[in-house]
Length: 255
View 1 (cartoon, rainbow, N blue to C red):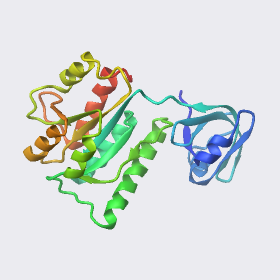
View 2: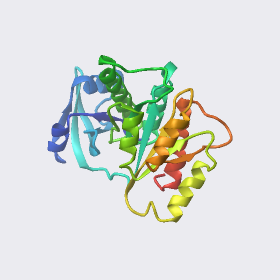
View 3: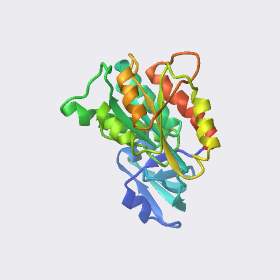
View 4: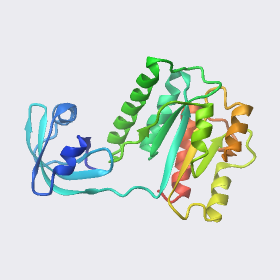
């Protein structure tokens, strides 16, 4: 069974060396001691959220705190092929479902997108509030899936902003039901031409409930993006991104 993982401030985590004690307090300490009811002798991992992990055994439990004897510390390797989910805002919490599942599946970054047909809108104070809510979602999902890396949630982009951002990325794949090539075939072509031999970043773009407009697709393709379909069926906004990530994880050798 994998060890439970908790997050702590970067400086505190990286200052500890094997043989020393680490005290987990705050919200994470309360969760470990009160909710999980961890006790002496149980093994735990602590991460700073950027891949540095310390491990050890609980030596004492206090009121909302754990004292841990650290016996292992080090940086987890980053994947050579980074995956990014560009998720259009969607109603009914389907965008949040997609972001949560994508984190559990190993996505490295998330970009919230105001698509032309997005019904949900982040305006004014809601813009940063929405991004922070997504950041909280990915942190919780990373913790649940024992990931030492917490994906970054980028600032909200509109379509022109997405086009500018996409033009600087290695590979951008737009999931679209009218695409003539499947995602598997598109990745195979790129892989066979050696496009994944060196570290790179691949973004998957998922539209809202009403889909990606023809104008948006044209703009993204003009910036170098490739359109692809997942299969014979049209998936919801909440499931399209995670489904694509499963396939990419396998085909790019991450799994």
